[in-house]
Image (cartoon, rainbow, N blue to C red; front, side, top):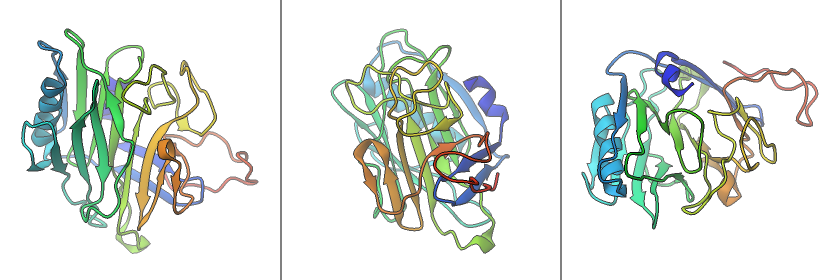
Length: 244
């Protein structure tokens, strides 16, 4: 599934509270590369992610090839949206944390990727979004994704950033809901072959933010979805018609 994501540049992201947006970007350098783990270290994996984001058009702001790296996406051509991504290192994992450009809103938990010798991660990215994952069936601490949204300039949205992963901590052994196993990341819902029901998701829109793993909610933004497959449900009748 993840390999095909490099060919899918229409990606719907829906917010339960009724916000509406999509990702609809193409062009530029689209990266689809493997990170071969010769040493199996956090630094090796972090360097590979940074290098491939640079190749896709992201800029390293600080910490090139160190244990704390800050990169920045390009600005979208419609609503002038942009994000930053911090790559740090825990005891076991490379940790990816999204933030806004002003550094006033940032993910506190992040996404966790566990390196090992001969364990190959794939980086799929363009200048506005990224997906990092092992190929094949999902395993714990193996998936991270994020980006900025495509929205028309007349919407009044000046900031819209999302990140998600399949682990909630540096030691998490569960496969939490993620886009390799299900299309809608709903709290307390175990989907596909996930082994737990707590998606790791952070979103910020126009100053409000939602960090599921840290129970931060300043705007009731809601869950992330590639597809909204129903017209009623989730306590709402009818369910809002999301812009996709």
